Image (tube, rainbow, N blue to C red):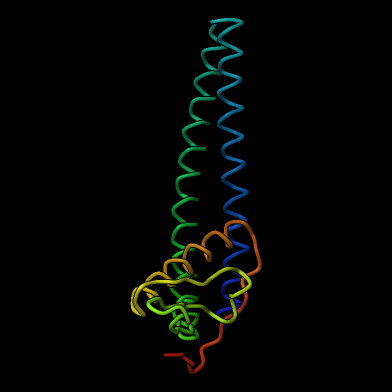
Length: 158
């Protein structure tokens, strides 16, 4: 499976995780609101039993949210691992004309702002990897299109 297809499939899963998290949050808030409303109006046995059921619903929704969050986190790490290596292989580095600083960029991702400037070439590479990872995770979470990256021979400027 190509990196682009994997990222697209993972992006759909991550968006599903986001929907589940929003649903669980709504359930938790709704249950809390019902508990507050019911206990404000009465403290009878029906209200106590209903409150107990709503409490269990809150705990269940919180556990589902936690499991969903763990799954999404692992999925994001898998995508990052599969995407960042080939993307970094395509990175270009070079000295800036002003001297003393280096730039680093990934040609396929220039429009997304994945470029950096640093004091040394190695610092530039390290910072570019961090920027790429932050951009990738944020793009996956927001549902933005992730351009496919295919492994190829790198062309690095020195």
